[in-house]
Length: 177
Image (cartoon, rainbow, N blue to C red; front, top):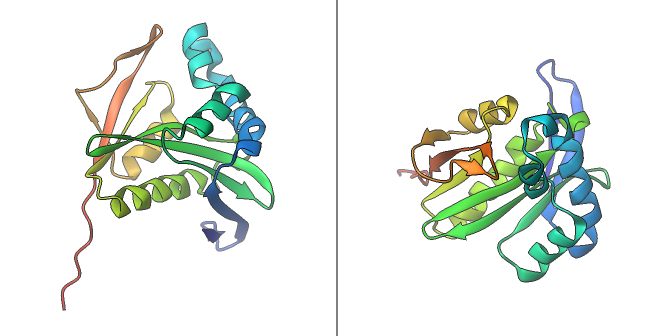
């Protein structure tokens, strides 16, 4: 998916492309995760940070085991964002969503969420679910803008770091003749 983007003043932003990740993307995905979360490292326990910022080997294992699709966002040929999805019953669980700090504000997060939403709708899933930490304010605003709301279900702790769950119930648009 290639998407030209304009900012609020109508100026062209760089073209962002979303595609499935391949095993050779693992080092870049690991780098995006690290750079996206390192500013929040002190808010995580060491174990929670390690579970969030995956190693190259962990990413390669996810891709090899095919636990669910993994996408990358590219600007020119550089990976600037990533997200993965894991089917969980009637829902799709979103995990490892990250956008490089330098690429924030370009709409990459929205494009990644739209990609997962398209995947979920095409596969007849009923909704999207994710867990996040209360200190990732920018991400929480993005999720809320995209239709997610907090729910009481899910995991409340990641190795001593607080979490909460957000859900977005999907409704296919119906057109009337």
